[in-house]
Each structure stands twice: as C-alpha cells, then as structure tokens.
Image (cartoon, rainbow, N blue to C red; front, side):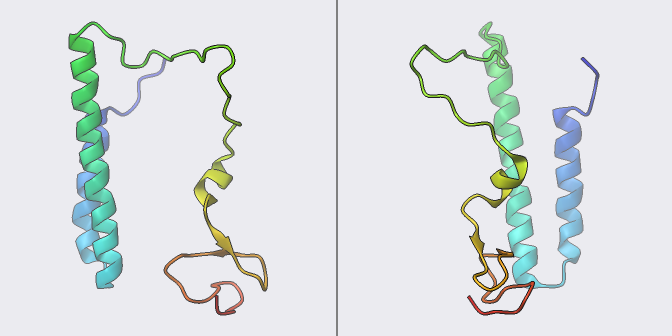
Amino acid sequence: MAEGPTLSDFMRHLQAVLEESSEISDAEEKQQRQWQLEAAIQEAIIFGNRFRELQEHGIDPLRLVKPKSGDPTAPPVNKIEALKSGAMHCTGCGAHLEADLSFCPACGQEK
C-alpha cells in the first residue's frame, strides 16, 4: 500500500483552510464555510481518538465486516448521485438547484 498523507496532515490542511476562510467577504458564506471546516476538524479528532482506542484494545479499526446471508445489500454508490442526493432540479431547464438560492443559477427561473 502506498504511503500518503496522514490524519495529522489532513488536520493541518483543514486548519490552514479554516484560517484562509476568514478572508471570505460574504459573512453568511464565511460563517457556513467555517462551520463546515470546524465540524470536519472535530470529526477527524474523533476518528483519530477512536482509531487509537480500538488499536489499544487489540481491535483492527479497518476490518471490514461481511454482511450476513439475507442482509440487504446497498446499491453501488455513484459519486455524482451521492453529491446530489436529496437535491432539487429546476422545472425549467433541469439544472441542479442550490438550497439557499430562490432561483435557478442556470436559467434564472424562480423556484
């Protein structure tokens, strides 16, 4: 397995991006972005702590659990569909609608 960035590298990256987000001029966008980054940092800390805890108890934190026979299997996830899940689409042009906009960014039609 190839060596890549560590959890610490990722957390340092998130912290740097959080500091950069203070330069966002729109107050609402800045607040939302900072909340996202702070939540990601917290999740990374929780993951790291849980990973170490499991290892200390002799449990492999990355062990995949095989489904039991008869368990339903989840359909394969398409990355694009996962990103757009729960999203609305414009009735005029079919473009993806952002939840915080009252109009379609592609054609201008109101929601």
